[in-house]
Length: 230
Image (cartoon, rainbow, N blue to C red):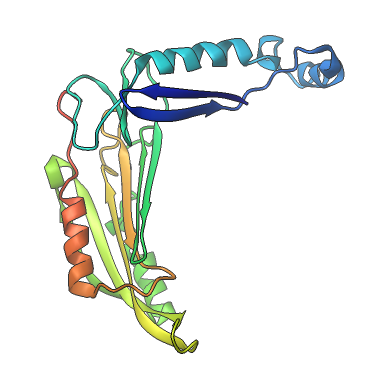
């Protein structure tokens, strides 16, 4: 494992990568096994290439405040920006925010390709799962285009059991599960596949359905392509 602690523009980052390094003499048997399995000598020691990639990444990384939107090409990450170097990279970014009332999660993947397997085209299986559960129902579903990004959202409501912290008794409370998929039908390295979710699983949220939808709409409404992305 290679790990670097970097402090840039008032933001601290921890960057790590897994490596295979069988160059030491004590690994001679393991290295032979890898070679016999079809690996090259270079593949049994990834340290030089992974170290070079790590140094390149650090050289292109800068700190960023949440409200700052870079204008150059590159990848935005929480509190950071990785400047584009002209090469194609595998980019998968996960962001999770959690408080006492809900969990908000976003996942972006630029390796996915355009597909007809969109959220709404999976409606049959989803509706059947709702019918079998007997506990969940559709609040709303619609196609939308926040910031020009083609997306489909489906909002579910239901019930889940929670222990009352005062009485200690188990009781049913309102449950919400909101999902959105974007760019599924047009996914490409420059228009990455995106999923967004909001739920109150295992939480007795203080927010009712109206408030949860308001929070969701405000979050989804901030989605947009970054200027200069194309």
